[in-house]
Each structure stands twice: as structure tokens, then as C-alpha cells.
Image (cartoon, rainbow, N blue to C red):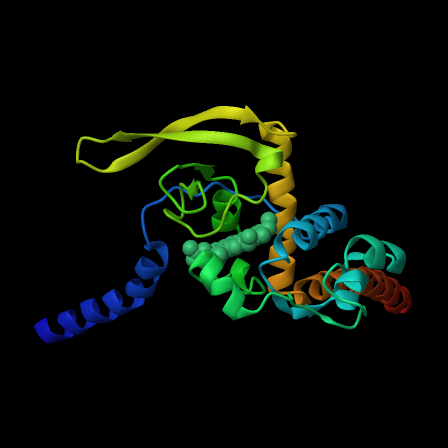
Length: 246
Ligand code: HEC
């Protein structure tokens, strides 16, 4: 009986362990991104930011321009004129021209492919990360990040957010905790506008990581329409049958 209990306990532990591990990985606070994949306008705005500010260093090598344009309802003129800086044909993959050999000495690391980052890190992580940059004279880029300390990426959207300084406090148990930010120089956007731009960008990166989700949304809609029509027809049929019975 005792060994049975032990086995049961062990089984429970095994079931719980992955959840614990997934929840772990640091005790940093993440802000909720509240993204909405059904909002095509938000996805399009995110896509614009992505191709203009991120694709110069990062690739999204699982995505083709034409697929993105089709899914997000971007017309071919807009695509060619304001979104395709690193490619000639819409059929090309969203890769960058910078070679890994160039990137390494510049940043110390190769900027990772962002195709699947929304799945590996999660939307809240990306949303918090892109809002967590601050000035730090001690790093090679002059920037640091509250979520990703000593990150090799500079704050590429600082014109929007402006320059901030982070102040840290030491808690009772000796840990460094973020106390707040001080705005050193304003950006072109206020805090709300910047959050909203980052929400759109995160939304786009979630789409990027699983484009089939949009197709599932579309199919889901027609399944609902079919069900409604089917229920209506069944009701009429039932009435028809019962007319003879009464
Ligand atoms: C100047 C080059 C450069 C640009 C432009 C750039 N990044 Fe980065 N990014 C990097 C580098 C380098 C890293 C690796 C940082 C490290 O490992 O310390 C990185 C890391 C990241 C990560 C973390 C990935 C992970 O899972 O660890 C994310 C997310 C990211 N970038 C998003 C973006 C987004 C979104 C944009 C556009 C707004 C962008 N980056 C623009 C250079 C760049």
C-alpha cells in the first residue's frame, strides 16, 4: 500500500514537472500583450514595422512576401513600394542580405531568425522585451534591456519611444528590482502610442510563427455558418415530419 502511494506521488510529480519548468525560466514580470489575430489592420501595421525596422538584421525565412500579402490583404503596389526592401520578387522568402560572417563581429552574436520567436518566447515576452530598452553607457551598444540584461540588440525603435534611464532598487533579500524609468529624451510617440505599435508588431510576429492560424479562423467562420443553416433546415424538416403525426 505504501509503495503504491509512493508511485502515485511520483506520477503526480512527473505530471507537474513540465508545467513547473515551463512556468520557470526566471521570475521576471511579463506584461500582457492582448493581441488579436482577427484584427487585419493591426497585423498590417505590425508587418510595416517589421519589414522597416527588423528585417535589416533578422530574417523571417519561413515566410514569403506574397503569402504575407495574401493573408493580410496587402495590395501588390503597397507590398512592392513600401515593404519589399530586401527582395525583388514577391515570391521570395523574407531573408536578409547581411551574412552571418558580417553580423558576428558587429553584434557578437548572429541576430536570430524571428519566424518562430512568438512560439519559443510567447507574445507577452516579446511585448515586454520591446518595451524594456533603456540607456546604459556600460554596454557596447549603449542600450540595455530590463527583460534581457546585456542584450546585444540596440534599441532600434528609440526614435518612437525616446531615451529612458532605468532605476533599480535592492530588495530585502538582495535582489535587484526595477523601480521605474526616467524619460531622458521624448520620442515621437507617447507611451500609449508606443505600446499600441508594439502590440501590432507582436501580433504580426504571432501570425508569422503560425500563419495557418488565420486559415483556421476563416474555416471556423464558415463552419459556424454551416451549422446555423443546418440547424435551421433540421428544424424545418422536424416540423414537416410532425405535421403528419398530429
Ligand atoms: C541592428 C540589428 C538589429 C535590428 C535592426 C533588430 N534586432 Fe532584434 N536582435 C539583434 C541581435 C544581435 C539580437 C541577439 C541579442 C542577444 O542574443 O544578445 C536580437 C534579438 C532579438 C530578439 C530575442 C530573440 C530571442 O529569442 O532571444 C527579439 C524578439 C528581437 N531581436 C526582435 C526584434 C524586432 C521585433 C526588431 C524590429 C523592431 C528587431 N529585433 C530589430 C539585432 C537586431
